[in-house]
Image (spheres, one colour):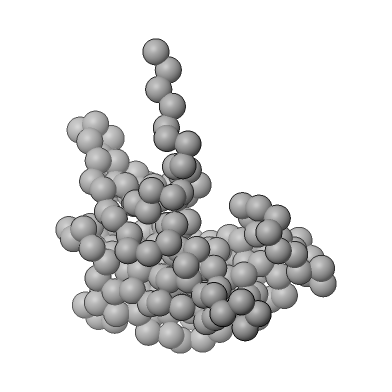
Length: 190
């Protein structure tokens, strides 16, 4: 018998824990993040509080970050089922429809306190996790014309790689005609 996942669930993002045999996944309308314990064949389920969770990224072995289509960014601890911190309207509100800007990409520089988020507004926002991982503080923003569809820090922490498009990575709801589908590299100060 072939088992298929529910139609409303997609898992576009998966990240592996390095020191443990675990994987973390998120995405889709079930509004969950799942940590799969591979050797134990079990999972931990974390419920989001608003919107579809479209992206997840590990910060360290104890914390991870998520983003939603409702414009929020959440900071999580693996020992707690609810977010430790939530930034609502992390990329502001769209003036045309008064709706929060969809946070379309999220990344964390591994084993640091630096997080980056991207949105349909073309801004990449940098955030700092406080010392206790209980809050996200805004640091800086960079504008690139288009939809920010993916973000990834280099392993040495010197660069942020950005995938920019004319359209959202999951559909053609909106289009920024002046934008170019491109890969951009942002040099970070060390």
